[in-house]
Image (cartoon, rainbow, N blue to C red; front, top):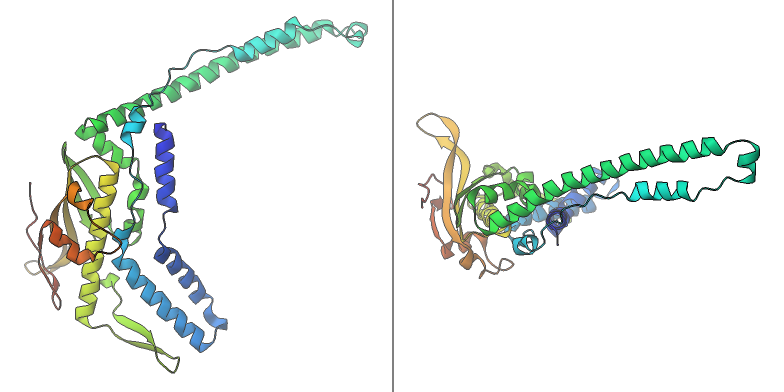
Length: 323
């Protein structure tokens, strides 16, 4: 498959790859906005379903990943250099050569005019041939650059791998849709630094919604310990997801991850981005994990990591790992 074919396929897969929770969340939100006509029970059921689906969405980001880029297949399909063609001019010349004045052409003395028109068409066809070749040359130059990018990525050239990330912005769109920001930097031939800036704990609802036996909606405060645990899962799930996406794009051996969140700096009294999780995640270990079944917070026990989390206190700043 050509580079552009792969690029379209991967980005299209990422755009289509919308988890059931995400689709269901939008549908539930739509229904809620149109809920005036629903019964009280139906509205209550809808609100509870929306709440439960949103919580699941936060905790399962790691379960999906874009299709891996097959750089070897791209590199094995070099673009062919275009050859100048005169196909349009040849067709126009053939039309002139085969032109035979009709009876009415001769009677109405249109022969000379017809010949002139056909000669003009030859000139226009020649220009069309030149334009087509110019476009082909431009496309070839672009494809050569893309093919060289594939070769550079396979050779693990830092600049080429850094450029590769720019081609697949949709890989991180779900995380960004939840308020995260991703910064990527190629450290070496075999490692990438990821700085993930996540939303603060306000991404987790402060209230829990449930359905009473009477069919009425129950809204009560979500215990702080539960909120913090959900937030921990969100942070770890988003972290695993971004690492999976990075490994799907470039053939590095490991990802050095640092997660930042705005926390109160007691020295300044301001909220500032501070590191709350840092980990070195080797590809070899990542490929052994069953992302459908694992607990995202527990999963970091498989890796060297730094974290300071307490059920009642939440995350506290840590010192990031360095390599």
